[in-house]
Image (cartoon, rainbow, N blue to C red; front, top):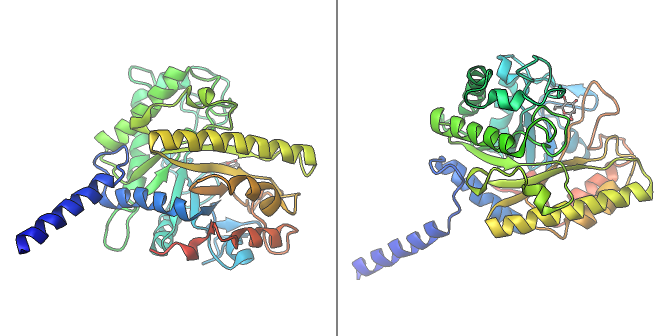
Length: 367
Ligand code: BMA
């Protein structure tokens, strides 16, 4: 009888294991596999609210313990926090938005301790000119980074620094924390050195594949989920033109912003772009068994005081999308914020949005 139960148990476990989704890194840590699977479960419950640099600074503050503009307004932290690696490649102490990497590691640990999720972008400098990621006057930078290119060896030293950072994201048990890496984003636009006019689709794909293979197979970084996030596109064909392949991507996303202020035409255009891109990523995610998310969105300064409940929510609520990440609230550029701070005209609306039954904040995640 005991043997019978054991066999049934093993068979059941086998069945559960078969159903487990594996990230593209077949040696991903168990925590990374668990995170990937948890994200699918959470997507069935609702859409998570995300905010870039949430704990590091806000509209009019910098580096205050436990503070967050999102928490000031809603009483809770966002479920997802975005972080930026720009200047890690230079060995800098702090990133291009003045966040100390040592602080970032501490924040990530805190966020995980309360069940939250972290995603990273990387606006790495232009290796050919030594200028910023936005220096895109050349169309040979990606080519020069690929194997045999003149900057290849140097670029690998940059990836070494990225790898060291990810490997140093640890909890108290010295166990690596799993995070999302949304690299080389908005590449369908032409405002970064990895953009559409700056390299061919083949070069872009090679850059992506080279990065994954170097981090994963050479540097043994196994705590990453890889997110692909073009700027908003017109068609699925355009979305996939530079897609490196299902074996190199865990999460399919897009970045899309509301421009043109608070006039009905611009808001309607934004909704249309959002709907179209949500349809593209959720269709593709279902077909390819990937996780769909909104890599970045928002409306700078939020002139639409009902942006969250009337403009954004009616569109996103119809799609099974894992999270929506609002961009940062800069502390040194008063107009550059995407989540309201206390006293802002959209604050009440943002709070209402976070209270929608299908909208998830940190407190609703569990560990
Ligand atoms: C941009 C702006 C910049 C910032 C960059 C990287 O969208 O917010 O000020 O440096 O992202 O975070």
